[in-house]
Amino acid sequence: MSTVYGSNRSLQEIDKAGLVHSFSSLHSQKDRDLVIWDHAEGLWLTTTEGERYLDAAAGLWCTNIGYGRKELADAAAAQMTRTSSIHSFAQFSNEPIIRLTERVLELAPDNMRRIVYGNSGSDANDTQVKLVRRYNNVRGLPRKKKIISRMSAYHGSTVASGSLTGIPLVHRTFDLPIEGVLHTHMHDFHRRPAHIDDMDGYVRWLADELEAMIQREGPDTVAAFIAEPVTGAGGVLVPPDGYFRAIREVLDRHDVLMIADEVITGFGRTGAWFASPEFGMGADLISVSKGITSGYFPMSACLISERVADVLYGETADDGLFGHGFTASGHSVAAAVALANIDIIEGEGLLANALRMGDLLLRRVREAVGDHELVGDIRGKGLIIGVEFDADRSTGKPFADPTAVGSLLSKSALEEKVLVRGGHGRVLAAMAPALIATEDDIEEIVRRFVRVVDRFADKLTASGLRG
Ligand SMILES: Cc1ncc(COP(=O)(O)O)c(C=O)c1O
Image 1 (tube, rainbow, N blue to C red):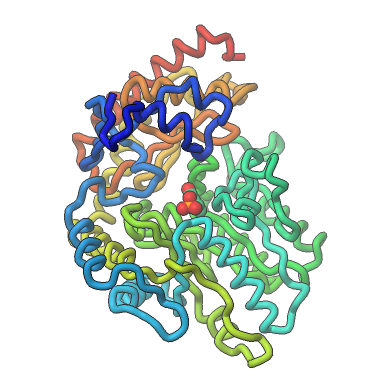
Image 2: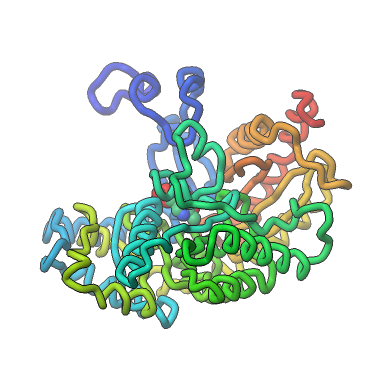
C-alpha cells in the first residue's frame, strides 16, 4: 500500500474516510475496493498496485488525444510561469484566450460569432440557460423562458444543468428539475413505443410530440430546446436520419432556439470538429468542454450564433451589465492547453482516424458479439459506440433491474481490465476510446470485450437476475 504523501494510513483508508465520489453509492463506499490510478499513457492506465487497464472510454469520453502528452504539460507549464491565474473579467484579457477564440470560431459552424468560457460541461449548460433568458429579456419577451430537454439526456449535474438532464437519479433527492424545464421523448429506436415500426414514422412521432408539448405550454413561453447530437451517457443513441431537421422545423415554427450540447461530441469524437452540422441541428448555441482540452485542464465554452449575439449585443442601458462569469472563465493556462490539444488533433489527423477506427470498432464488435443471446443492439457514430443488452433478445425485452444487472457488467469489465461506460436505466457498454487509437488497440478492446460479455453472461446466470 502506498503512503506517498506522508501519512501512514493507506491511500485506500484516507480516500474512504474523506472523499465523496461522484455518481456512486455513499453507503457502500467503505466496502468497495478503490482503483487508484498512478500514471497513464496513450490508452493505458496503471494503478498504484502496478495493474494496467485498457481505457476504452477515454476517461469520461474526454481524453481525445490519449493520456500523457508532454506537449500539453509543456504548454501548461510555460503559461503558468508567464501568467499563473489571471482572469478575463471586464477589460482584462490574455493572448492564449484570444488566440483560442479565433481558432474555435474558425472550426465552428459558420453562424457562430462569440464565446463565453467556463470550467465544466455543467456550467456551460447553466450559462446557456442564462443566455437564453437574457436573449428573451432583451427582446422584450419576459414570458418566453421554458427550456425543453429530453428524457435520458445528460447535460450535467448542477442545479440548472442537472434539471436539463433527463435521468431520474440526477433529480431524485435533489428537488430537481427546477421550474421551467420540461422533458420530451428521446429518440431511442431500440426502445420505441410498440405501435411504431418504421424510422420515418418514429421521427414524425417524435416531432409531433414536441409540437404538442409546445402547444400545451404555449409557444410564447418556450425559449429553447437542448440536445446532444449523439446522446452519450443516456445510452449512446445516434439520431435517426431526418430527426434533427424535423425537430428544427418545429422549433422554427415557434421561434425556439436550438442548443447543441457538444460536450462529448465537440473536438473530434464523431470524426468532425462539431457533430451538430452533420445532423442538421442548425444550432443557435453550442456547449463544448471535455474535448477542448482533452480533459487535461478544466475548460468549457458556450458558442453563440449571430442570431443570438445580435440580440445580446443590442442590449440597452436598462438591461444592465452582462453579470455572468467565473474566476477561471477565460483562464490563460486552460487556453494554452486547449491550443496545444487542437494542434495535436489537427496535426495528427485525428478526425479522420476517429472515423476509420470508429468504423472498425463498430464492425468488429458486431462480428464478435452481434449474435450473442444477450446483445440487443449495437450502434455508434465515429468513435462512440454502444452495446445494449436485453433480457430477451428475440422480443427486445429489457432487464427488470437494469441497475443491478448493469453492475454485473461493470464488474466483468473491471475484472478483464478494460474500462467501458455503463448506461442509466438500461444495461449498456459504451466505448469511446481516445481518437489516437490504432487498429491494434481496437483489436485488443474487442478481444477483452468478448471476454467481458462471457463473464457477464456467467454472472447473470448465477445471480438469478436474468428474468
Ligand atoms: C453531453 C454532456 N453534457 C454535459 C456534461 C457535463 O459535463 P461536466 O461533467 O464537465 O460538468 C456531460 C458530462 O458527461 C456530458 O456528457
